[in-house]
Image 1 (tube, rainbow, N blue to C red):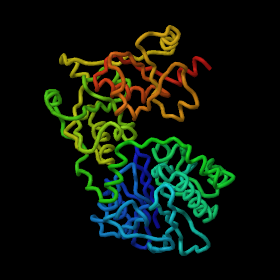
Image 2: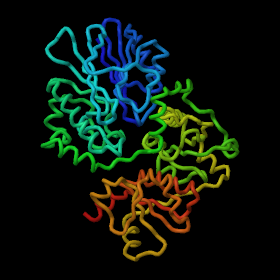
Image 3: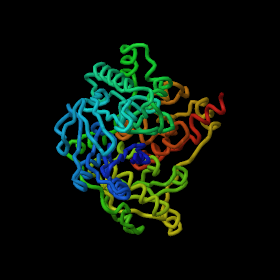
Length: 450
């Protein structure tokens, strides 16, 4: 018997392979899905079922691709936004046998209308279920967001509450298998660990402690979430069925002259923020490898072409992999060697880093033509903000930069300086040249001011 968790870094997506008696099933596969076939075959298992908990918004589903690879049947929930072209519909109470294991379907709308949970039973031990795959309804330490139906806010929050009661009724012994972990855009309060039980969540998950259904609904409708533009692309592809991932996840290598001559929509420097700030090629933006999944979908649109700039081949491969998983795979090539480019006399741009003393001096002096721009999310800013700063969420600079004045001087800040550098890099790529970053940002401010 097998139960394996497959984690997708960056997206913090969790999928699962379960197997018994020569048969296997996959829950919520990602686009680059050959790994499931390889893992199953290594255990002598045939993938016969693919279960989707819901229409994912943050990544391309691998279900239609895995179906083509294996001939397995795909099961999806009722009430999707449109027909899920590659799947059959599963309903409440449907059961599927995988050797000694049995999967029973629960309809759990709220996060999305088509949401399902899959309850795992071991038929050799029939006294209650063993686990439950909860998709984006219930996480470790959090519950799913309910902002995808803005005209039905209270209704869908209530549906999620009812679905959570249904899941929690399975019993405290049940092991929780969610579709995302900490760092995902699908929740805001997830625990760092990826293991829990329904009993532990019942006692400790803050979102399960509300005294009434109405109190839960009131809380959910007031939550702040952001929806990057690429969510609409994911939603469409996960109804139609996305194409397979490119077989080669390393972009074509570009020379410095080829990088200069190539006509692309974005030159994306995937090095770490301090490396980018210290020196980068003019016109490039900064999306560090570890931040691509969170922010690329804000700044790069469907079909737009990309050239990558990195420190080494591993960075290029990791960057392309992250982009492919959200269908931003129009990648024309990759260049390595910013320092050698400088040594060849190539002009470089820098973004200065400044500290708390300089921020305080500018604030106290009321410096003309200068703005301290906070790019954290709304919840972070609501809990603590520097008086005199202005606010635009980093992702929303994708369009709102047009309302900023390139002749003005902007200092970008966030919680530490990481997102601020992404914001500064975007502005620099749009022609802003009076920029610096508050290194340490809110963390440094609190350390200095208590």
